[in-house]
Image 1 (cartoon, rainbow, N blue to C red):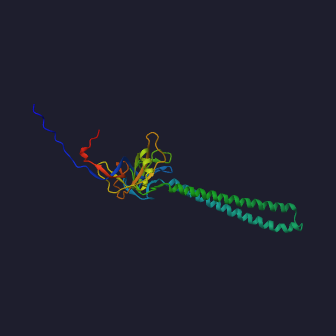
Image 2 (spheres, helix red, strand yellow; image 1 turned 30 degrees about the vertical axis):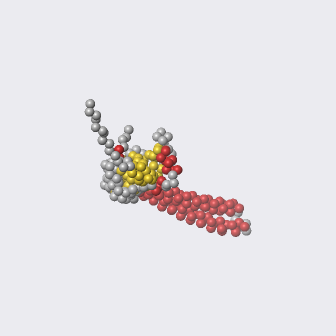
Image 3 (cartoon, one colour; image 1 turned 90 degrees about the horizontal axis):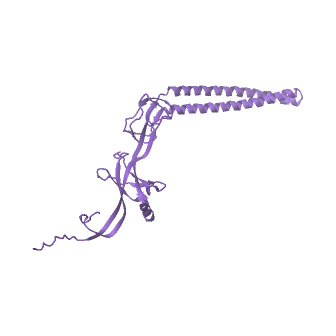
Length: 293
């Protein structure tokens, strides 16, 4: 039999070069602040003042609740305050009269020109008038507190955004009865610049970084999006959970990425890649020569 030809063997030159070593984690994007907007007073929703999915500013009015009931309570509280002030004025006038009577009777009692009973009566009337003034002042304090509470509840009829961000779809319709006891919120506002990416690193990776001389907060991170593209701006690690999850053995951390144009949105999934270290003068071979098992 004819001997088979010798096999074709390809040869490549092994090279030495510095090789960066990356770590990668799958992450979920979320707003740096996510504010759930709930009503703080009970009433009928009469107006929605924002476009769903649009940017809103801190302090911008998003919803309005029918204010008529709360306006009436403010007027009632103001009337009660004015009444309390009138009561104080009357008690202060009475107290002034009692002081004057006591000042007139004391020298007469010292000369036995009036009886001890008249002096005791004047002293008691002065003490009672002083107590009445203190009670009237306390009534004013209560009336002022009630007015402040009524004004605060009236302000709550204008539901404002607590942060700059993007407002979500409204979950309550005009005419609905809303209030703090209703479980469903009105909407949510997320601050998107910067945006947060939650990833989970293993306990071994955490220990490796902590034992190294590098500052974890200064490690640049790249974000690879779902379509394989790399986000133009790099991020940095900003927060970490307080404990290792005992069920998974991982630590949840959250790098932040700049997002001034709002391109990134909460709920997106991406891959975070970080240059953790480098291997100096490493031996490298072509990628096509490597087989994964």
